[in-house]
Length: 110
Image 1 (tube, rainbow, N blue to C red):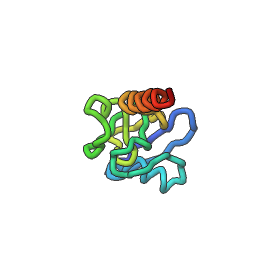
Image 2 (spheres, rainbow, N blue to C red):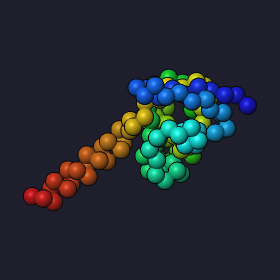
Image 3 (tube, helix red, strand yellow):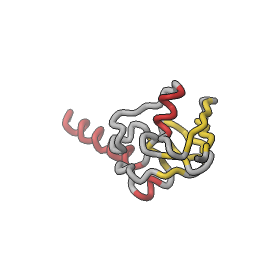
């Protein structure tokens, strides 16, 4: 079973992960504070931008196919190579959803 190195950009944290384990599970096991909520690939709380490397994440239903090429949902993603991830980076769809919600809330205040 292959082992891969996952480096978290800007934190100095690095872990070794089997290709059979999710990145989130490895973070929890190693005591790394990785944000998460649903653990089923829907809420996007555990999102990270893939700076280098590849993952498989067939159950990451919260991402579009295009987003899944650039972002990993750590609760679903399993490494397929050594990785560099930038945690706390969210795909454009969640950013536009947040902006639309904010715009709607601002309109309600008027």
